[in-house]
Amino acid sequence: MEEPPPKPDGKSEWWASPAVVGLMGFGTTTMLAGLANLPSPYGAGFGNVVGASPVAGNWTLFGTAIAFGGIAQLLAGFIALRKGNLFAGSAFVGYGSFWLAFTLMLTSFAPVAVATAGVPWLYGLAGFSFIWMMFTFTFLINAPKHGWGLLMVFLFLFIAFILLVVKFWSLASGSTTFDPSGSANWAVGGEIIFDGLIAWYVATATLTNSNYGRKVLPI
Image (cartoon, rainbow, N blue to C red):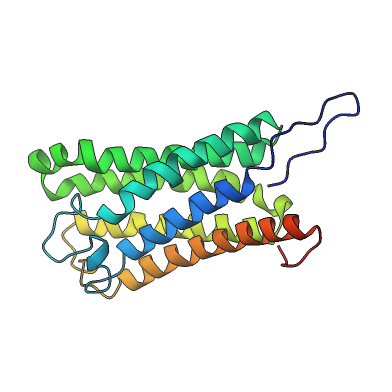
């Protein structure tokens, strides 16, 4: 996530690297999303309640998704692009937009779909997850150049979207495997939490190594 050095005849920017803000915005929001996918009663406090509409769920996630996962990541992405870091800038702008779109979709548009279409609206969420899985694949095949930490972030994010596609498609088809109390949600929620933890670690290592001027934490 580090930006390339300035050209010899160019001026150095006073902007610091936005990697820590961007990765923390992604990591913390992703961990909350994972908690919201855990089976009840563990996920109940995060909106995953038996008998509740999926639209009513994730209520603990939306605020962070807008402020930190969305707006903060967008700002980090714009700064990274300004500093010439195409990979980090594109990733932060992309996933910042994802969290804003995710929140807007579930709070504004999905209630109308649920009222008119019922359960089949979940096929839309499966399609939404599939498209973002493809988006993630683009970064996954480019991540090895940026270290094992980021490679793991995108690898497990790619797997997370695969699991979400399966989950929403199964729910839309009438399967009870991924009902809020279903044990299969441990796989989905746990995997998403783990991915958020990896992003959190990469951000922590980036900040710590920069702060101390040496490699304190491997990344």
